[in-house]
Image: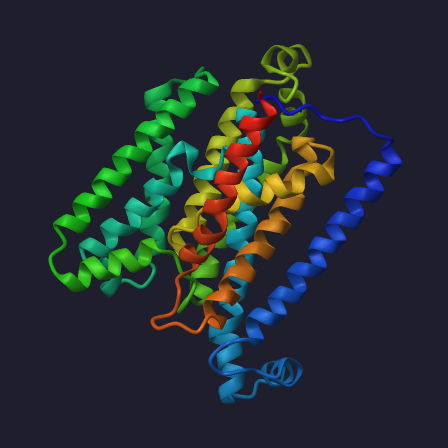
Length: 343
């Protein structure tokens, strides 16, 4: 489905974009504060911040600095990555149903982490889990290029992604089937459900550089995505190097989404829901949608992570479960909406 930009006066566009970005930024900030305050042990935000800055080793200061802060930062990082990647993939494929996992990167990153859990490497090396996820994501890119070739069409990329998703899912199921113990199988299942609990600044340090670099690759394709929304032939006539655009987005997805999945597990539907909600606010222009989708994704994952702590169930809900509960009905609604508009 082709998404065409809607012309508007430049000053109005700038004002709308600025208002939208400020609104989303304030929302992310408020949700970030709520994320570090809310939990089994409520914290007084300002006084605890003062304790951390003063170097005091109180219980509240340790909870904020070593547990809540990295969790909130990772939630914002993961959400921003998935939201921006979703907007980029929808712009590249010109389909509002596309999302970051369509190329098989998310499933492959998950498989890399599952292999680490299966062989017990996470018990001997703390960062083995995120590193395994990133290696899986990078292997996905290599396989996509092998299967589709350098000059692949959009359809070929999608088919390669479908094949890679199926292969990664099959190997993940095999790992579960052959798990050496029920505990190992349960550990794999819980990781696949997605969570940001028990994460540290080590995870932030490992994932942040790849997320930032991948995000920069996304943002740099904004004008090309606007041209591509008019069709591949028009984009070529405007001087867009489609091969380079595809390569940047595929590599960016591998690095950024692979890093996100490697520290959070499977968190679905963020890249589908957020760009669709924000697209009317940016005149349906793919290039203008990238940054708002990053902020919107950060807000959604922060809110979902807060919900996992507020909903009183035992054991605690996993992050991926909450996003799926929100995203799956939205996906069905989107399918029905597109079906009605195409009649």
